[in-house]
Length: 447
Image (cartoon, rainbow, N blue to C red; front, side):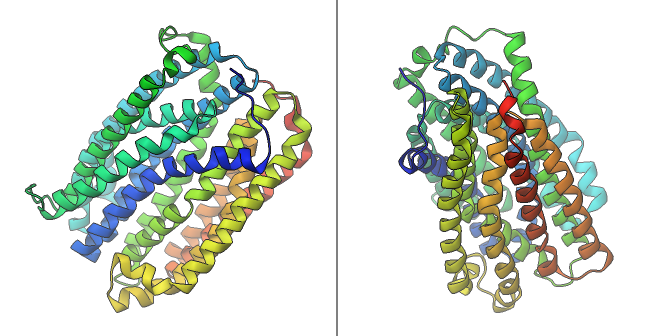
């Protein structure tokens, strides 16, 4: 079986569209949770911003491990060495479960102390800590789901991602409706109902994807069943490749949590936290296509390099950027045309909508910046130079954190200026990634 990829737009879309569906899962879960919680009240909607971003930190850690594993699998696929794929995959599962255990322990024994000391509203503290102690149990299911995604995407089987996505999304919507409000004969759990719904939905998605892989006999095809023992060399390679990405994505989302904490501490308007959580959901939901093309970029670049076709990488990246940015421009236009309708989905209070409109303008244009910046950043991942990715992210996060601290804590300019941090973030990411790709230094990298 030939696992090598081409670089045509048809190849790009064939890989990217199913990935979009898989990335849509956590975003739809967040989106659905926040719509229902917004119906409970604006205070619940605001608290969901802090809990959502906290869980995203661990989701991003898994995503970093997933991307490292995906790039390695894609490289072996490009080299047409399927016997190595099972070995890498089984070590990815081992590492992911270790990280999940650490995440659960941190959430139960360290995070409560942090939130008790940094948040100001006592009601928010109690609500957030209680929610997270439930929500974090979804982490092992999420990580296994992500590792299975790395296998399917890295081996050009991304069309099967849609099945698990659909199962998880429908389960989450059904349980949100039942557990938050006590509908369909279920207990009324309020804010915590969204946590239980998400955990069960993630478990469902994982089981469905496992079933698909079993039914399609991927275990035999990629030697998954006879490579389950601990492999020191494969684990070392995975950690070397993934560790910079794990730190990169973790510090990126931690900086977002820092931003939300500053909003909670320095709110100049009663709806600041609720509006910002709405922006996070809009950013996440409408950025799905961009992240899908970013994952496509890292996978295809790695595969093409594995085929020794280094000279075609710039052309491939440019093609992916043209599609991603075109979609982002359309999304930006729609968000600005139907701005009030979008905001009213979360809360139809006129004060909330008026306060959110200028922030939506800033976020919608930031989506365009992200559409090409993250493609370039993920192309660097595909080259195997993940330490460069970490350096780019680290430098950018320093700029981002300094900006939000000055704007929100020092000068208290409000959340519209605060969300301008996304412009700084993505402009910096693009500039540094583009310069590195143009330098050609990545051509000598072997993984």
